[in-house]
Length: 446
Image (cartoon, rainbow, N blue to C red):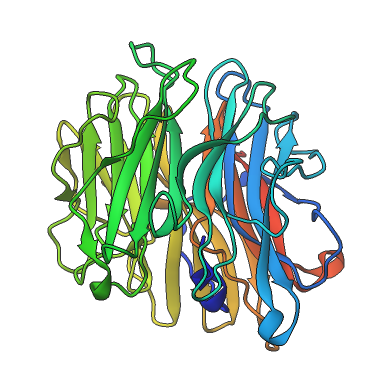
C-alpha cells in the first residue's frame, strides 16, 4: 500500500465473542503453528495475513503475509516491506521456509509490497496478488502497481509477476493503486479458470477515488483493461482512501464484489457481474439498517449452492448477512449481544458443506486479553453459535497489543478450517507480533 500504511501505525487490535450454547461440553480439535519469520530483523513484524487451501488437494495450504519495518533514521527513514508465502502439504502441521514471489532479479532495489491475497485455481494452480510500489517522496514521481504471480506447483515456486495495472505518475497517470483482491472462477462454465482482480485507484490528478476490476482469461498473457464497479468518489470526502473490496465467484460463474462505499455514509455495498467482469450491476447496500449496514473491512465468500456470506466490522461489532435467491438477509451479529468493554473487528469468512463460518478478533478490557474466535451458522446465517476460541492472549501487565492489519484469513476444505492471524508471541515465540496458523476441525470431538 502507500506510505499512509506506515503513518497509521500503531493501530489497535480489535475482535469477537459469543456464548457457548447450553449442552456443549466438547470442543473442536485446534492445531496451531507459529510460522517462521523470513529474517532476523528485530524491528520487522508481520501484517495482514491471508490463507488459501487447494480444494483439489485439501492437505495443501498456502499462507501469505507482509513483513514490514523501516530503513534509515530521521529524515532519511523510509518504510520497508516484503511479501512472503509459506506452504504446507500435510494440513498445516509442517511449513516450508518463506518465499518472496515478487522479489526477482530485475526488481528495483527498495521497492515495497503490500496487501497480499491468495486464490487457488485447479490443477495445483495458485495465484498470489499484491501491491508493488516505490516509497513516495514528496514532489517526486513514483511507481505504483497491482501485480499477480502464478504457481503451477501449489505454491512451491512462482512465475515472474504480471502487472494488472501500473501507474508511474508520469506516463500512466498520477496516483496510487491500492488494496486489491483476487478470485478465480473454479466452476465448469465457459469462463472457468478466469482470474479476477479488483483494486482502488487513487487518482491524484482528478482528485477522486475509483474502484476497478480486470480479468485474465484462461491462457491469457495480459489482464483486460480495468472497468469501473461504481462512480468515482471525490478524495476530499475520505478519511481513508480505499474501498476494501473483496471478490467471490459463484459456481455458475457469477462474479460478486462487496466493498465500503467510502463516502460519508461508509455503507457496505454489493455488485455483481454475469459477463466475466465486463460490466457490473448498480451497487446496492447489503443492509438498510443505518447502523448495521455501515462499516469497514468487509469479507465475502460464495458457497457451493450459490449463496453468498458477507461479514464486516462496524463501531466495535461484527455483522454478517447471507445472500440467497436474489436478496440479502438481515444483518446479524454472530457474537450475539456485545458486553461492555468488548470490541469486535476484522472478520474473515468461509463455508463448508453444512455451515458458514465467521472468524474475528475479540478484544476484552476486563480481563485484559485478546481472542481469536470462530462462529458457525448451520441455517444460512439466521442463527449463530460460538464454535471455538482459536487463540487467546493475556494482555495484563501492559503487554502491547498487535494489530492484524486490514484483514485476517479463513478458508475451508475437507472438514478442516484454516485460520491465519497475528497475535503477540508468548513463551519461546517472544513478545512481538507473530504469524499463526490454526487448523480447526469442523466436527466437534466427542
